[in-house]
Image (tube, rainbow, N blue to C red; front, side, top):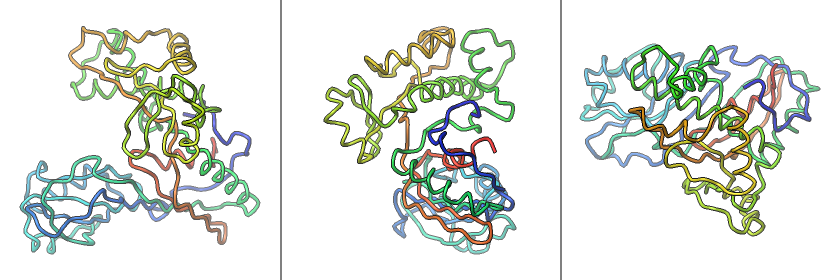
Length: 339
């Protein structure tokens, strides 16, 4: 990530201390729908601290005496944070939920609904982030960087969490795709590694497109932010107004067997990235593997909304809403740079 260009490269890095304690990073899930109050699934609005979502599910299953498969979540939340999210538990009596007690997990609300929560059943997340030891001289820089992100969008890079602690999951993924990796992994891990290489290629394409990631060219494949639908751009000038209203954005490649291919400028860009990597599209659609990478298109940017900034005693507090699947770290990266 560190070698990828910044949209706000003209603004110097800001020095700050981040995540000094869990309350410096608060994330609250905004659901796609609210529970209706009736149904076989008990909906719990939970606040967790210093525990990953997967571990939270294990604790709930053990303490509530249900199978993990009966528990549903809409999103995975940062462990080193205070996170609030809905959880569904099938056939759970409300008395059992009321009796639940755990030092890292609190149940804030209880309701019921007809269906299990599934990954993606959310609109997005609202964040409150505190940066400490921020100089008053740096506050205007932060505002300037955020103004650019609010106006043009946030670069939709895959973050460091995609590439592992050693920043090598994409390297392993490429080796698996090429058939040169001699270690055996579970099928699920092989898919994770290979998709990490897809993500790496996307990041390289976005880096090349960054200066025009909020402009459309004929032949682009654009995505609608409302529902993710992708369409081919015929009249770029006419569609540009929708880009400026943040209704649509150009997309980049997640190469695979069913990925839509762009034309013209974007096609040339993607071909050049593959050439520089020394690979071809065929790498992602090899018939000799039992795991198919179907591929997809991913928007090159995402909107930051409901932005708030306050500053007191060297503590800068940011609040904002991001659509589902978008990372707050991408926003912070543009402010802090490599600092």
